[in-house]
Amino acid sequence: MEDKLLREKEHQEDLAKLRGLRPIDDDFMRCIFHENKPLAQLVLRILTGKDDLIVESLETQADFKRLVGGRSIMLDAYATDSESKKYDLEVQRADRGADKHRARYHSSAMDIENLSANQSFSELPETYTIFITENDVFGDGKPFHRIERKDLDGEGEPLFDDGEHILYVNGAFRDDSDIGKLMHDFGCWDPDDMNFDLMKQTAKFYKEDPKGVEIVCVAFEQTRNEKAIRIAMNLIEKGKLSFEEIAEACELPLEKVQELAKQKGA
Image (cartoon, rainbow, N blue to C red):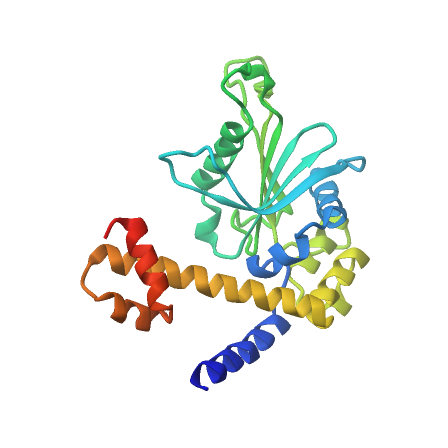
C-alpha cells in the first residue's frame, strides 16, 4: 500500500514537471528527438546553414564504447548525415556544462568512435560538436560562435581544415530569423506558442497524448533509478552502511544493492 502511494505521488509530480518542460531540458530533449530524424534534420539545417542536409541515422543518449579507461560520455543526440558527417547535439542549461574543454573532449570522443584500427587517419569523418546553451555564455548577444582551428603562421591565418567543427548556440537569442525562432522554441514550454510546426507537433505529443506522456514518465522513472544506483554504488564504495541501510536510503530492492556490491567486488 505504501509503495503504491509513493508511486502515485511520484506520478503526479512527474505530470506537474512535464507541463513546464522545454526542449532545452535534457530529459524532454531526449524524448522529442528519439527516433525523430525529421526534427533533428530541421534543427541541424538551421544551425549549420545547410539547407540540403539529410539525416540518415539518429541516436539519443548515445553511449560511446571505445573510451576504455577514459571518462565516459553519453551524447544527447548523435546524428549522421548522407555524407557520413557526424553531429553531436547537446543542450546545456548550466553554464559550467558548456566548458570549452568539454566541447574538445566530445569532439575527440567522436574521432575515437569513428576510426578503427585498420583505417587511415584521412578516413576520419567531418564532425560537428554543437552545444545549445540556455544562457549567453559568451556575453555578446550573438546567436552563435563557430570554433575552428587556424594556421596562425599561414598567410591570412587560413583555416586548418581538419574537419573538426565546434558550435556554441546562444539559447537566449531571439529575433525573427530561423535561428531566433528556433531558440524561442527550445526555451518554450507551451507547444501552441512554438514557431516550427514539427517542434510544436512533437512537443504536443509528449505533453498531451497519453502515449507520449507515458513515454516521458517512464524516462523520468529511469532517470530516478539511474540516480539511485549511482548513489548506492558510491555508498557501497565508502563501506560505511550496511546493504540494508543503503537499500532503504536509495529506495532500491535489497537484491539490487547486493547485485551492485557484487559488481563492485564488495
